[in-house]
Length: 191
Image (tube, rainbow, N blue to C red):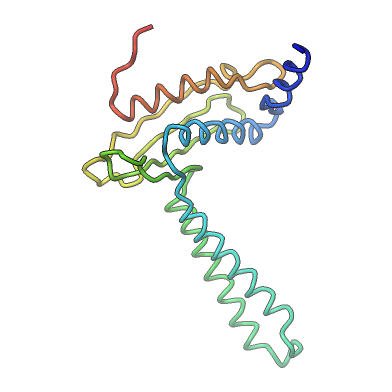
């Protein structure tokens, strides 16, 4: 019976390739998303939907340019128009990613029943060739009167992963909850 529990615990464990910083960052970001949404914050997917819509428009423009009925010399002006639209929509997509999204991986609405009128923007950084993971929690509307101060935490990922690459979620959970308490302005609990 205990072997089955150990096997199911191993199957549910989040494991990363410790030599791949993208894998480590992805698992940490995914776990932080679970922690934040577990505290009553609902993910705001509007920006993702806008990005998907613009990406779909870009694909449609490329397909129309590729499969247009006339052949090249006859459709020159049409192709130039498609290329211009393709560049404009790609530029718009890059502008949204650069100016709005930055390093953010989670946008939220405020929790239901909350006195605040702003959600969270959770972003992270894990530079290449570094083990320092920086997690930043900020207000989705920093100009709002109910916006909290931006808080951040930088720790080595070696504190959250075993030597086999398994994430120790309890330690990460504790650190993220402490950061969320800092954002909310709650005093730290003495242990």
